[in-house]
Length: 118
Length: 107
Image 1 (tube, rainbow over the protein chains, first blue to last red):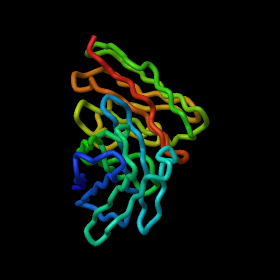
Image 2 (image 1 turned 90 degrees about the vertical axis):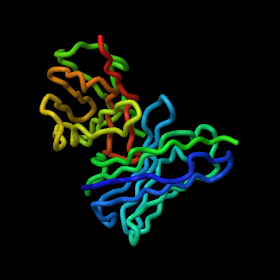
Image 3 (image 1 turned 45 degrees about the vertical axis):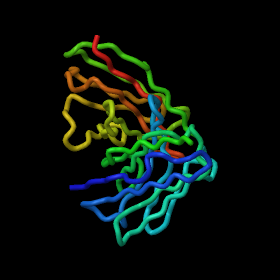
Image 4 (image 1 turned 120 degrees about the horizontal axis):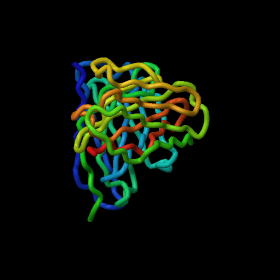
């Protein structure tokens, strides 16, 4: 069965870079869309971007060019990098798989809380 | 960006009630809309995709309808497991966006 698992630091300093990895099992990341979605505490969901291998990406303009998503197909992992973080980037970060046409996400990781604080 | 507005924001209902949540898009999105259920501390769970298609494994008491700018999620008979927050998401154009959520509470 398909399984996604986020990993990375739970604490990042202001102005630093947030880096998270999503490890996927049960399906190859060479197919489908692979997303990052975040949720600040007590708030709603925000789509951050996706990677569609090989190498096609799309990002939410609200992140003002601070976001990048890359993939390592040999490890079946994809990675989120978010630069110049502030306290407003404190959130639970989810990785999620979308179907071949994109959009709706049928599998999600459990989420990882990342706090931005000195 | 396509803005999605859900109503109501909070809904108080009893077990067995029929519940309807509306999602209105700021511009036409065809049928490229999904509905998710999220419980506290858990990831969202896909319920409905392409506006009206029931995701595999989701109880048949959930249904979706609509196209263009107005969409609804209906729970035919509210069950104890259905108390949660529900989100709509459009994927007609980038950036993909979510509604602000509707919390279904016990009355």
